[in-house]
Image 1 (cartoon, rainbow, N blue to C red):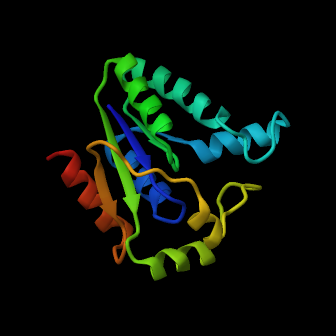
Image 2: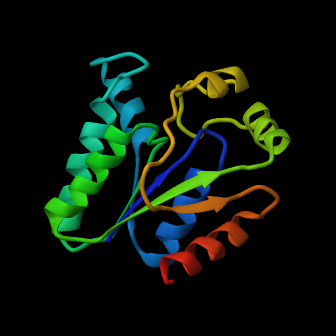
Length: 166
């Protein structure tokens, strides 16, 4: 199974993806990690463009063809990236579930952005204005939405797991 987790920075995507991967024994592919590795290699600077996603698609496909479940986590802001992740699942012959993580409480989301730090050395963190200005297209098909506002991570995980099994 391919679980594609997207959403704006600071909504709780990485926390949720890590918890879910541990719960179901899936591979967690994080596009931020891939992109920062590309930058560290000297091949590109930030922003790296489509390279991080392209590497992620290839790695996800390899893992899925080996019979592993994959959680692909990224902002996933555009229809083209969402379509590409779905195509990875189709090519591997596995079901794909798309999940959008949101934080509906603007004050809480803004606080998260202001107080968080990156666990990936050298990865630049967007500020609130950059998040507001980001090109983030509305989803145009059925997907699971998890609202992390006012919830502890384990509560958000429980909500997601229930919806994945529904």
